[in-house]
Figure (cartoon, helix red, strand yellow):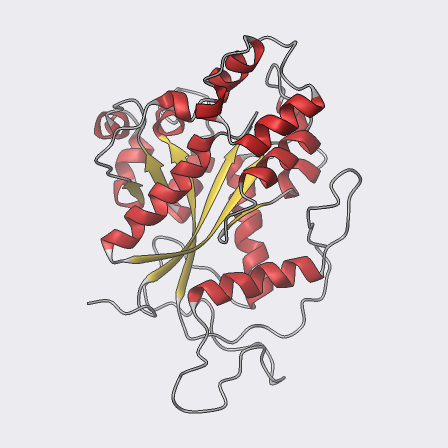
Length: 309
């Protein structure tokens, strides 16, 4: 039986428009974490929502300051999911591959150690020895392990570190942004664990991998081959069939974790498009798709009401 230290520690990263963020998006995080824990092989220590850049060019995409705020409102009661504005703050649109690589490099700087990919040996020390001899942040001064940090404490400490080196951007005061040149000081000392960032997505994104020319093969190799993905199927999607349609997905099938759930949740609870249509038509079912703080913000900011699509 695997112990907490031998299990792979996971940060789930979800990229997308979040235009607006729905209950289904949050549900994906919760179901993925629950399933990964059930396998007995993983501990999910954090979730990251990364809204796409304004220059993505999708029709009806509201400015990122609104989408970031709605995402923040949607996760305000969560103790493990956070919203990251890095993608929105770049000069232009970023590929999913580059977003994953950014967060991997960022975690490396925060922890002082490399993150493993799916092909690394499980013994890879990912968060371990400090880079220098300065007293580490976590120092166990006794021998009974009572004060040994938990995975949740680790994620909290990482988030705290990110918050301390923030630089505020206009209209996004509530969000922290990491200064690429910041000196993060002493690396954390933590028992040696394996830490990975996995891309969290729905089966629709998995299916998009099969569309010729939509994704660069080199990006797919990195996303699925180096990082790995967690897929939450929707609307009865046949993930096995989808994976067999792509040579890259077939090649890295072992790096794709499909969340198995007794309840097959309809696409509608995840669909931002259906949420926007409900808002435009004054459909009361919008409360099934969006959480109340997000609805209140949309009405207050007059978003989506007079737009199409």
